[in-house]
Length: 215
Image (cartoon, rainbow, N blue to C red):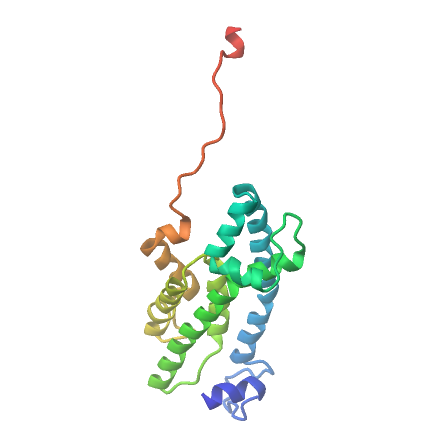
């Protein structure tokens, strides 16, 4: 654990001596951190888009009185309201971003803690250094699951992805499955209602009448 924290801020002093190795200023640890940072714009846009899609949908589905009941009965909306999110039809971008963060961050924090636990556990058992590849896996997994996914399912999905799809094959660089996609595939088949929804789709409005040729 000390080595994992120290190498985030400092470059390891040990370098290869053999002639067959290419030496560069960037190593696997730094590369994974850069990829993690590179996904941040998509993460911020995802949070904004959740708010952008949610607020208009709430106003289309519920009236003013019903909307207050929905907010009171949903902890996401209650926390967002406590943080000052405006649920009006003309809410600004900051309210949309905050509402999206209320949905996204609990999932990401859960995924990061649970997946990080498995990474540390396997590193201790194998006596290997902790690899930062999980930084990328955690944020990708959190971005590809629905924002309304229960937290316990998020923990179960990332556990499957890290343990079954990655660690049992040897860890970073030895797995042939993508841990984030494998975790989502597991949730898709195990809990399809929370991934794809189980509500009956409303059919498009239609009408019947004489065809133009018969008139």
